[in-house]
Length: 276
Length: 302
Image 1 (cartoon, rainbow over the protein chains, first blue to last red):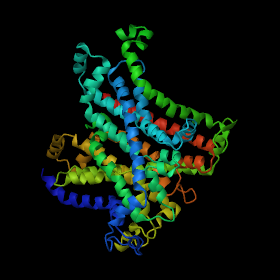
Image 2 (cartoon, rainbow over the protein chains, first blue to last red):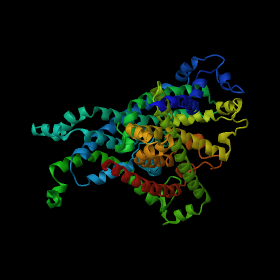
Image 3 (spheres, rainbow over the protein chains, first blue to last red):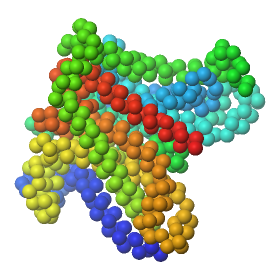
Image 4 (spheres, rainbow over the protein chains, first blue to last red):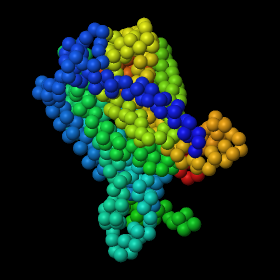
């Protein structure tokens, strides 16, 4: 349309201005992560480093144990993803396909739990985790991270199962498949895009999780990235050029994963009015 | 209805229902252990005095509630939660709407722009908050430096150092994270509105602003409701930004309900106070969640 041609001359500059404004911290990150110490702490500050300090990339791995924090994050996020999937797929199937008393209540509860803030129960969770002897363990984080996305993921998965025509499944049932077989052999393969979304979401949640790690992890060698980076700051040795480099490296996996699921995530959150 | 005439026992215990319960059991067990039981325990705890190890020592009824409700700190945190959520959601909404409108115009590079706009949401909140801490740094931070050299603000505040500017700085980071969600939801909604509507409105002589209000906003009505509720809950629940940027300081002036709850428990070791705040927060959240769930189902079915 004509107005769109005219609008472009306004839209493109405006978009660029807003983006410059919103991506500011990432420009700062990229500027700082390749600076030398003196450049990082120059007064007045400088945007362009006097020389590019590539060795920062090496230093964060060798002097700051970044590998150990990455490993912890990976273990926790993978564990949480597996547990989360094992819990939410069967639950979602039951809600999407089976008739049972309490189904509506379960659906309401799921949507409400989705909104639930872990901070509210952190004091009693602390007692539960302590009593189970799970303080300062990966298991505590895996279980809790998995659990606090289980409602949303069950909900998403339920949405995917519902879109699969019932006939396919009924035909298989008539051919002598059991319910469990139709779920694993027919429904799941069709719902793979949904499954991928759910697994990535669980992974991202666990990767970014801060509160549980802050509260339940005390030994340095079990700290995931979020807490390790948080602990870098405020110590007298804070070296922001290393911290921004580590932040950059820690962000890459979640950024990539987020782009894969972004559209389906929005659809899942906003409901029927948005198609994934 | 055949369903209605079935005996209750049959409805509760037939092969199909049995399979459903088995499939749901693991999730339910975990939820009970790590969510429902902890909520009940928080309610119980709020009626007891606790010691520094969070053990219940003495039943005191509603004395903890009375204590908290007479505390100026508590009401200030509640007020801040209100301001934080209200103005936070308003700004996110507006910025998100503007970005969605911009992204709804077709041009080369639009996909790239869309991807760039998502980054603040896609990024990990704790890590973003850390980055902002460096951006806000009064001496070496590039924000104030850039504001000064561009002449946009010759005398910017020290951000995280002073009460009001610290609260605004925290609020901005939370807003910044939340903008892309609105932008994406609104964009998706706008793209679902048939172009013919705009064309016929144009024929009828409606201007751009008229058609924005009567077609775009009208078409987005349900989405606006759902996304605003959702964003309000997330904003209200945002713990990470404040905790990482200021830990509620300086002198508790950036604490909202959810952060002061944590400080009560793990800094002051007043677990009974924290329990009271948990109960209050839980009740607020439950009300909003019920509204959200109702609208979600209405939209799904309608």
